[in-house]
Length: 248
Image (cartoon, rainbow, N blue to C red):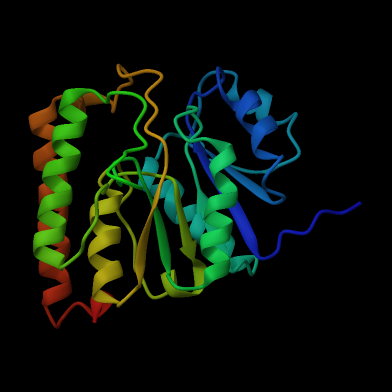
């Protein structure tokens, strides 16, 4: 029997994830029917393992960055006529069992972006975080989230969670071209500039490997924080300058 996608595409960016990709995709298929994997130039056995999976795959000939993978997933979803794109990471820090919660939020049809939050408190002051993140990552997330909220009038609790759902039509208005890990800085600024409605959804905080590298200079927390700030400030200036139709 052919499974229906119901207008929802699940997108997963991967880079050298041979340790996780087979297990994750096996679990994901219990909750998602249409799956796209962006292999961002993996140099391990990830491409061979993906060839055995019943999923669509786009392979970058070389590593182009997390942001570029996000751009490709949004373009694919738009080209193939999907209404929504759900994104999640491949390193088992996002639970496939949470996918139905995103689908429920999509069905409520009250937002354009449904963003997972590992720090959103629920119930009687309780929190969903089960693991402790590396101190530098939590500190940078908190700092950038506070600055985004202050400058954009948002009320985010987690600026960097990659577990999200995007209304594809709403994202067509955005001109996204940041290829690296600073992609969320551009996305949040443009989402606000274009009036996208944003909601957060609590997800578990899971850190299987707190030593994972960002690659090169970004492993230095000070360099990483400065990099994020520069991208955020540059995008705010672009959107405030009439010459840039991108955010008008």
